[in-house]
Image (cartoon, rainbow, N blue to C red):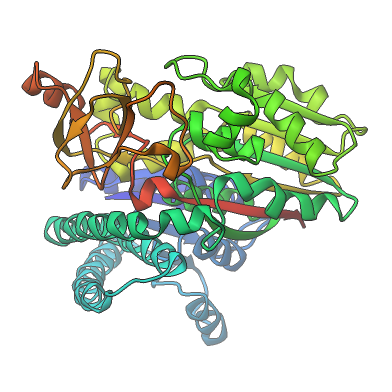
Length: 503
């Protein structure tokens, strides 16, 4: 069990910390409230011991902030007072137990044991609530209902991860897979209507519908795209930003394929891929590399069509150093619109399988969310946002698409020239198992360009991924359980975006 002990006299508590260590507890310490809150934002704890009387930020204030960051973490308040009003106030802020000073190691361990028993009871109750909630979730018929259900699954994934119930976690994963099968059928039945304008907000509509109204308020607007950011990752970052911004969270749907060359080019151009190819053929690239090399040109043309006539800055960064070198451009007071693309997360998910250490650390989606939070807490992206929170501006954060951990291989056949992505393919003579993937013999109906007659697209459903018939077992062993994007799933298509207004 991992504990955080927040106390301004932490050095006097070393004998207790040593005793807890001997009993198998891992204890992290903080000497004041702000340091403790920073640790809670960056790391995960099973239980927090919190001193009530501290210099600077008082225990009750820290308690309130803890519950804002993580409403489910257990908190035991350490206090010299048995004052009833204090206890009532703490209970009102959801403290889980009290430890009255002075106390002995045995008394401290007794409180921890009591909280562990409470944790077991809570876990049992949560299990019952989860099964009931899962059984009530049926018959989704609108994009909004699917977005709500996706958030529902992410909520329960977060809750169940805290209580380490393998049985419930397996039920949740089975439900997610089943839901994605249904979601794929829903998308395929409605996607062409969405492209015609009767559906959710899509990638190519984002600048006009979300960004343009903010230009018209005569304030600086900053647009941050975190490539391959999923809804569950975004939720993990929100608590790090609440001190600086009022946050409105929303969603939109990525176009298909849910891959950077299609989705992000659509965001910047304001056009669907087929429209880009028809209008600017010199800026559409079919090859596997360099497909986003003309984003700034596409953006410039889109801004012209939307009537934006002021200065703007366009920055793409993979590392902190690149972002640091671009700070002067970003913070130039003469620009009205600043666009920053951060590619770190996309690089991270594609590096997991190739990097043995990452593969051992990031064993599941929850671990990836945790790594994302740790990265963000120490990144220059957060520092950039803190600086923007001190300006009279608005900030929009989103991604171009999400991703999914692939689990089920499916064979694909075609010519030698088919593309390499594991979740979507284009090329001649494609053949797939149509239960596992959407095969587009007429890609233009999905607003997708073709390089030559006979070119088809195949887009994987749910958590399937494509393997070749030549070495199927080798491909399966290499790519199973990797993070991929380009297909049809809630994780890839339902993309978070947020409007941040400085406090």
